[in-house]
Length: 229
Ligand SMILES: O=C(O)COP(=O)(O)O
Ligand SMILES: [Mg+2]
Image (cartoon, rainbow, N blue to C red; front, side, top):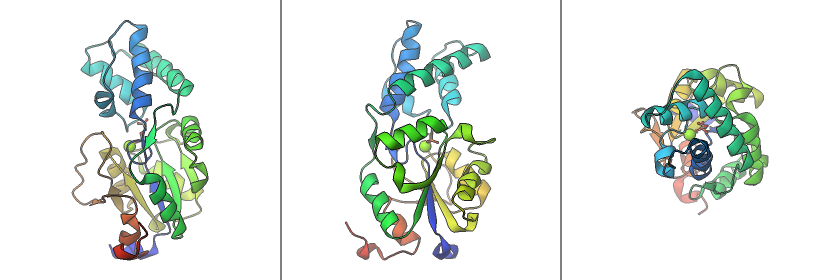
């Protein structure tokens, strides 16, 4: 991508891209199910539904489990889920391998960092603070802080605007088709991480990276050999 030489910032998806939040999300879902006497679900099962926000998460799980899916029940389940999640936002959440050190390497190269996530905005700030990486990001915008969330490109463009940049100056990194569609809609380069348990990304034009520091090479910051281990 010839335009990558002008890239000044990298915007990241959060769940499934930077952090493995699935254990805490599954615990919050399982508390909702337990209130009705329903059996808990495995983390790997719940993980498949993360990436399009809490309402879709709950709706798709209820659908697959043959549980009630009327609007009122889904809404009440979402409210209960968010309350549970807010009570334990990062008890079992971890970074994927090398993420913390690679974010610092990207930042040290002069790239600016942002986050565009379908996690609620308040929870996003809380989790970033608990994990000690809030200060790395110029802007981190959750789904309920914008009029139209991912996959709508407006969500990503709101992050770009908050960073005082133009869309030609950023790349987006994510783990699901929601992220891919958002990047494509905004017309920005998109990179896929190899981890995360969400739906398989079908975007054949996206660049797959093996770890975040590979972005230094792709964005023309240094040669692969020159990247500190
Ligand atoms: O679906 C969510 O709640 C958040 O997912 P995201 O961080 O991958 O956008
Ligand atoms: Mg994700």
